[in-house]
Image 1 (spheres, one colour):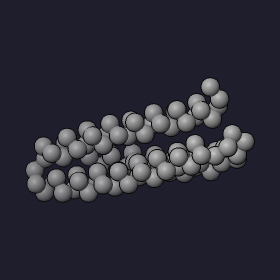
Image 2: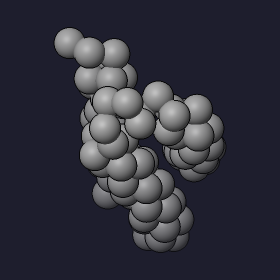
Image 3: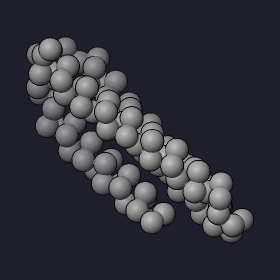
Length: 95
């Protein structure tokens, strides 16, 4: 397994973790009172949007050549960290 493939696998695992977190939040939203449900569902939509952005970045990385991905890695890590922090922030509003 190349370094690029290992990196992609790591990022896919993070996306899978975020999917599980979104599913957990959906379950909480379904059990909440009507007013709280609106807020939950708004936050869930924000999380889905962030997750979709992260997925797009992963596709961009997968589509890059083995040589070019090293050049993209630094910028990609900054974007991924930003998405990760935004996801954590949005998810923390539920706790």
